[in-house]
Amino acid sequence: MSADHYRAAGWWRPERVDDLVLRHADALAGRCAVVCEERRLTYRGLTAAVDSAAARLRGLGLRAPEPVLVQLPNTIELLVLSLALMRAGCPPVLAMPTLREHELRPVIATLRPAALAVPRRSRAFDHPEMARRLIKEHDCLRTLLEGDDLRALCVPADGDPARVHTAQPQDIALHLLSSGTTGPPKGIPRTHEAFTSVIRAASEVSGLDRDSVYLAAIPVTHSFAFGHPGVLGTLAHGGRVVLARAADAAHCLDLVARERVTHCALVPGLAAQWLTEQREHPRDVTSLRVLQIGGAQLDPATARRLATELDCAVQQVYGMSEGLLCFTRLDDPDDIVATTQGRPAAPGDELRVVDEAGRTVPPGAVGELWTRGPSTITAYASDARPPGAFGPGGFYRTGDLVRLDDEGNVIVVDRVKDVINRSGEKIPAGDLERLLRGHPRVGAAAVVAMPHPLHGEAVCAVVVPSGDDAPNLRELRDFLRAQGAAPFKLPDRLEVVEALPTTGVGKVDKARLRRTIAALVAAERRNAPGATAEDQESRPSS
Ligand code: AMP
Image 1 (cartoon, rainbow, N blue to C red):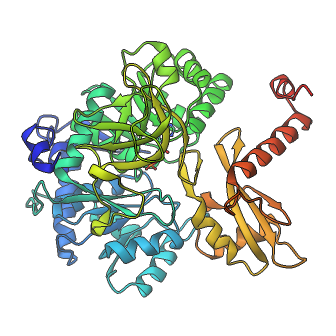
Image 2: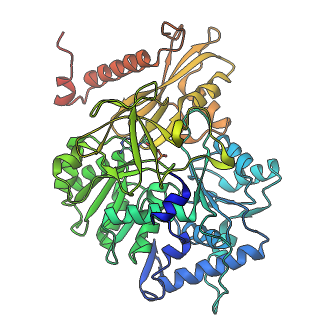
């Protein structure tokens, strides 16, 4: 299977992402394309803003194929700038606003972006200050796009700006960032022809059309809300995109009611918050048609409650920024929707479930999922194929343990990669452990997932102090913050131990640590003053 095969099969077409996304712009010129707080842009306005911004980017000296790091929250500027960069042949590198220097430095060193777009300074964090530090450290970075200058860049010019087009369908349209399994995030290059095929396939199974109103509740810099099918799929079908200022359930449900939202993508933790918020403060959510849930494990009971209490179709989504995207289908029986993560959206995507030696397991057995096909990359940026990332035959090794049901639906069971999945945000354990070991009072450290009622998993640091004076949780969090680690990586709990348990071969016994911490957390929940009957029932019957 090769690029030529994908083209011959019609899976990859000779098209560009910006053209696909704005293909209805003339026909729908006066219709609203994007809403962000009180601002609204029509399709005509959006296209003019994109063309104007693409021309101004050239005026700033940016030249194809120089990438530009885009670390913006859900704003009109994020959308306009990303499309304008693709139009100008300067691939946007989409970075979540929560990433910090520890994660961004290696990305900048590898991709060598020429500019950086960041949000205004907020009470929570000073992005422009971080950007200035990064610019000082990296000679590739020439331009900072922020504040009023960024806003002005994305305003439609008077008259018809000339259309800048430099990219070819085979060129890189954008870089997504991997969530990183062993170290910092890696650039995931997506060509125009491959990414448009993903947008088309994902849109089709999501039932997007001109009447769709898509609420971007999670960060649009993540592929799930960007192009899987997200805001790009919605625009490509002539729908309307509503950008949420924050992910909190009250704000998002207000937007559902105000804008008559039909589609939204959430991680399981947020979906659970929607249920609570809607029960306590009911809104009119009768417009909701499809609620997509992905990024982390959704339990079947919550899936069923979402469908009943929000009276909409639930669609489980399992996939990864590297490409593969599985969806339950809108006409699947309720049981399939509640208990599986669906099957590939794109024709041509192959799944293999393998044992530790890379041999295909018997049907229905659990193994690691390997995938290849038109949706999935065959290398990271700069043609990097880190050890363990790809298997023979060009298969991408997902690091997820799954089994397939009789219809080919994926059921995610666990994972082999040493990553903590905190509400869909992935924390590579090894990377955090390396940072922790840098603390002067830490001798050895391991981080493992612990159960969390809201996030599904949270971060527990298990530390062996180097002397008598062990650091406390606050000190460790402050230390990691000072190292430039993203806030979602900071441990939620600390356990100080004399020695880390090891396996027979001398490796840290993470499975045992996870079991011990889970038992501790469960015991604390049972004994907490507000423990529910459910908590009491989970008491062991010894
Ligand atoms: P990302 O590249 O950030 O999208 O993360 C991809 C990873 O998220 C996958 O390899 C899985 O480990 C996890 N993931 C995504 N969707 C699901 C899901 N529906 N259920 C369980 N894990 C998921």
